[in-house]
Length: 214
Image (cartoon, rainbow, N blue to C red):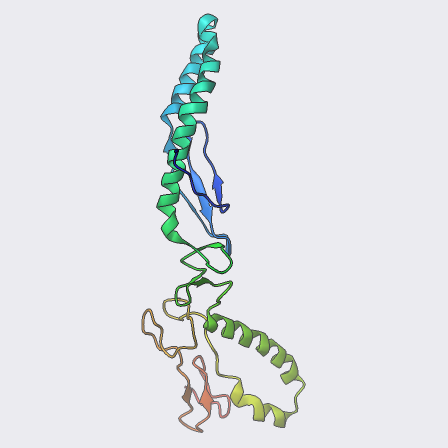
């Protein structure tokens, strides 16, 4: 029996009579990979036959029909072979989620720790950072309406930030870590003012309590 060709819907065929080229993309983020253009010998042959038919006419005038038959057989066979080769080349860059069956890129949308796509199993560090950022916007509006006494009471909760990526190498953080798992950079650099002892954020240049330079 002839070999079956397994394929998915997350690809685009950019092939022409001149050669073959395919694009595969992530079902989640849309990031794609394109194979290098592979020239088709059959395509060149059909162009030659078409040119001969248009130049000489007569018997060779049937060359256009010949070229179509060549394309429908040899070209399709070469196209299938190029498609299989393209899938084998780019398949390692993708993973299929066993929960939702989506094909996602391993670089950005695959949760290696969970064995699921990040749509089904998001990185907790990223989700915590996003939730915190959303909550902070709400608190900004609420904080603007607070009395001075209430602002002082809530100040200690404003400087603890959960990062979604490393500030040094920009590697994504799967959880609320103290050090980057990729480069080892310290992620939480919170200290205290040498003069008054107030807690400072990692980007503070001056103490918000007494104004002392950090």
